Image 1 (cartoon, helix red, strand yellow):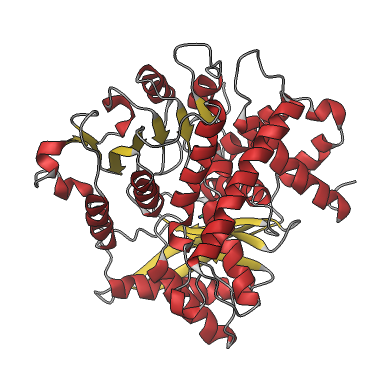
Image 2 (tube, protein in one colour):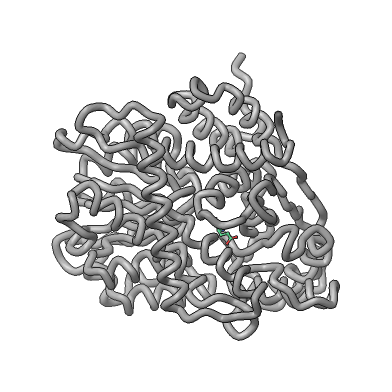
Length: 459
Ligand code: GLU
């Protein structure tokens, strides 16, 4: 009888990393790293707690709260908080594990962690959200600190929630300090932090296109399929449009909006703003489906992701949640001509989808595609969180130009490091592009394993 994994998402993330290390020459050259992987697979600490709060009817509600403090070799634990009904330990361990190596790839001193609760913000009033955040932080406060663990946002947690969480931390500890990132601009937040994941994703994709075409092409004129409609998707879309690309889809958990004519006009910045306004109200994009100009210009497909509904795609950017690209989706994207896939979401692709993408890297074939994993392509968000921490420590606020320039540099360095490491440790077939998956996994892992060794975590 097959034994089902007890932590399926975590085991998927672990295997994805372990298999790429195993298939490279890393363990042949440095067999001791196998030991490091065994140690790194276990979180340094997991905190689980109950969160009791009162809803608007005066009734008692209870949720499960968590913080996975996975690895502090490179810096304080760092990673977002996710509020979503699906949250459990498997999901937070997978996110925390990814975060370790992602944060290593930023080049900044950030450890890896993740937390959250199985709280569903949908349909809750502002008052209920505030009460929940206060109850959640009342327990979390004792486990975090600016040099210990610095949470931030993720799905279901953005500026408003960070504000309530920060206020409660400050009350309990009587200290104004950079314990959370993604703060408001007037109270310690960094400019460009809300935009950073989406912008960084596009900067990364620009490097992919530049490398694959020897500098002949850019994102300008490309059809860009995006899933999701949250923070990452919105700013990825806006940056794509700003650089002359055409956004041909957006989606949410209930359905997808795809352009009827992929050769016609794509989403406009105004339409993206309208979607952003809907999200603030915790509304679904289906509301737009029967409204002009949406009804004429777009097709709304219920309960679907965009991937199998687009006849021509150049760039695909999964920006919604984990496992949102299946093997069949990957094959459909390749059939639609997709050349570049880069994840704005964490573990956006299933292992089957990754295998499909990774086996199509030969540029001399008609349907080649180049895949970039989330831990490289979406690290712009946590990188600017790192810059927010630096600004808080020095009591400074940098200009948006300075932050954007640092973000550009970090994305470029990450791309170059992934490429260089892939060339060093993995055999690339003749005419194929190096595996950014393997290169990024290996580069992030070596950095963490070395720091752990220096600190006596393994020997
Ligand atoms: N949740 C984001 C991520 O997955 C950002 C985390 C942070 O800024 O700490 O990387």
